[in-house]
Length: 438
Image (tube, rainbow, N blue to C red; front, side, top):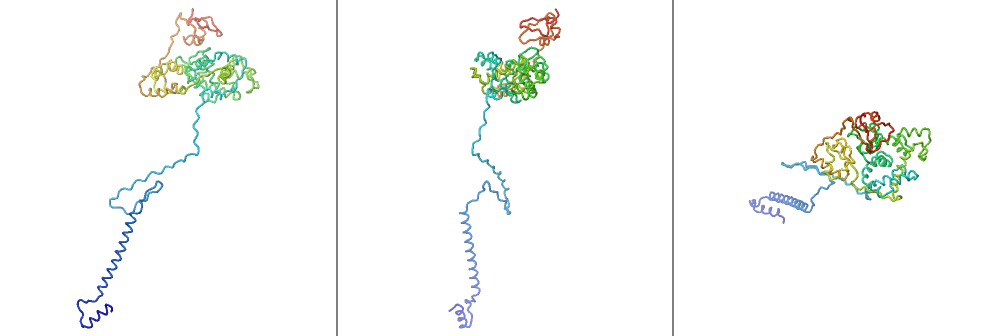
């Protein structure tokens, strides 16, 4: 029997409804509500369990280098921290090449560079050339020893000729002209490493006044000589050997000698109408080229220019005595004098003209200059008083009538008249000249 039937029977039998037997509808609703709540609680519990499981098993997200950061949430807490700065962009790595890059090749030594850039690529022996080979290197060992202190300056001149695109025999010109002596004096007023005449020096902007004679300076005179040689190279583009003939005789004389002649690189110099003096000069160039180009043929062992001996320019921000700098950096006084003759005579450098020093000492010189320990030097100006009555001059090596007249401030014509000389007169070492009227 169902519950409703039982309750109905009780009511019918008594005729009255019992208070403890109220209608069941409210109880049934309470039970339904409880059942609904139970279901909802069960669902909620399941969700909590699932969330807890996710929080335990899910890995913590990480930000990779190539992953863009997520934008900020639209829901911010009441006291939110400022957003973190964006990470720097990733650096793109350059993939390594399949093959290693070759290392830069070391610069060839001085003698190799000389052999590779000659106007006479092979030795051309002739009676004149062989005669000068014998005179230069009759004693190969002594010749090599004499070359050794000249190597830094020879390398400097070779480097300058390379920059101008000139034949490497340019390095031989100062060897013939002065044996690389910056203070050499020649006939007719020629002076310096390159034996430049006063008019030629002025033409290329060099001063020729007493201790300020820039022909004594290795850098200044070399710059002027390179400009002169470059002009000769432009005038004889198809016959570079004539560069040296023009340097010896002058461009005008060479052009005049070649006027109306058909010449080319293979024409012997003897057929070009050049003077004997100029042909002899070219024989000297070729003889030295043979010695330096094929030294083994003449049993010659050429000296080596060691690393650190190459000359480099060091600027001086204020005038200094080069002799004092040489003492501070452990450099021989003779070396700094040879390569900086003008500054050595003046006992002071100039800011516009750097010193030439061995590259191994350049850093020490720069540090010494930066320390401020060297005093500012006062240039020493060499002056010569005018000749006095009864004064005489004893001729020395390198003197000429022109240089003597300039030195004592007398007219050249007067000097010749007082001594019974002419422009063709040859001075003898030790000869005594009057410097005034007898």
